[in-house]
Length: 142
Image 1 (cartoon, rainbow, N blue to C red):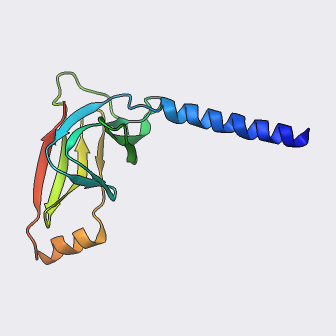
Image 2: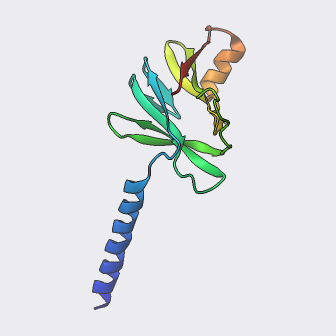
């Protein structure tokens, strides 16, 4: 009897976890068509259509995520303070740094949130040494 209760509890917890994960969606989405392969937080992404935004709109701060629209693959990018949107504001942009032929997402700027991602050690050393030219590329959000 005890084993049955434990198994039932574990199963119920698993189902609850799956339902929460399944319902996770970006509340205030911004869409971008990224024309090149890139990296974000150490994960590689192919060129394509992406949505960025907070995972939940229930609080004034929130986890930001990037969602590959074709596959549904979502990755958390960090925590930021959510701002109030201003009417008629520019929808924002994704800012990438290109170094050694690789694009890396470094910043997301929108009317409702903004986040900067830290450079990895090798990127920071490359910028300091000036050995390779680093280029900044912005992709508009809609």
